[in-house]
Length: 159
Image (cartoon, rainbow, N blue to C red; front, side, top):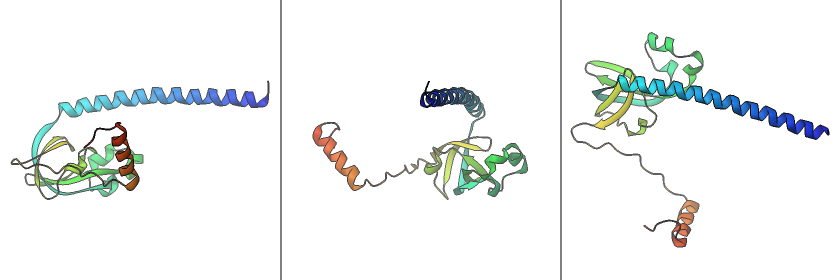
């Protein structure tokens, strides 16, 4: 056998081994995430919140209670996460927020939120007010040209 063929077989074998390991690790993480999501759904409650401020910040800079910081792995303390400073009744708290709804939360307004412990999972407007939806980005020149060509070709419905 030639050295090039042996090298190719070794690289393919190692690549397959890595893919199998990633598959099983992903399967394990997915099961863990499903378990946590079930726990969040079990403990959720609806609360009226006054949103003071929101930003993405590192956990070590968020002024969280010591009990919360003790549960966070040391590697994750430097990661930026969406945090919302809210007033719940007379108490001001810093809460974690779901990445999907972070842009929907209005600042300096009262909202009806679904929370689970220290985690905001959903937000609705209070007193019939509508929450602002995320505005779409402006399309660039090439994106507009491609959309126009697709409409003319019949690949996309016309406006």
